[in-house]
Image (cartoon, rainbow, N blue to C red; front, side):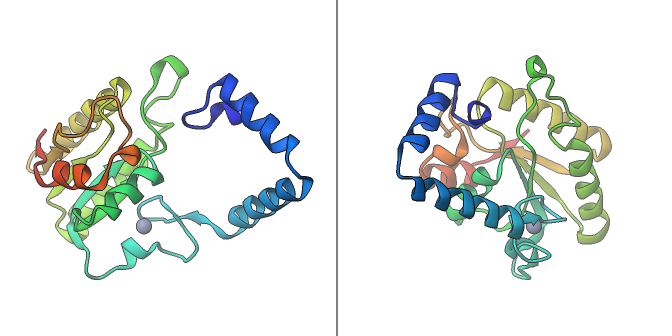
Length: 192
Ligand SMILES: [Zn+2]
């Protein structure tokens, strides 16, 4: 299971497992208790799919957010990084990762149908006018972006669809990018 975690391969997973098992037993128990507690308290926000403890997450509940702008990201970690940059005034939608046909991860698996529903709701209720596709500049992130852009343009030809500027390092996840670079990429986002 550890080997399926982001950034982990079979070797690093084995190292992590040995590290956890060889430490003090109390530490492992604390970790198990913390994860169990998080699993009990956290659920997915019905609007954006991020993790939250209340019915709706803080961002979606924030009246000050610009509801005409939606940013779609690959992970909760990417959403947090983008939000920490303070550059994005709108709302978010969190996909369940990115397309990976080799591993049988297709549009359904990453939550595309729910995303399309969310955009439809936004257009109907909030006058949604822009969607920023903020997938990573990795080959799979690019493929996911093209797929999303195509799906959006087919359904809503008048919707502004943009992508974060190329200032983001190629091959890097947004969550590992420094905040000023993220902010720059948001400000100079371009038409998709
Ligand atoms: Zn939310």
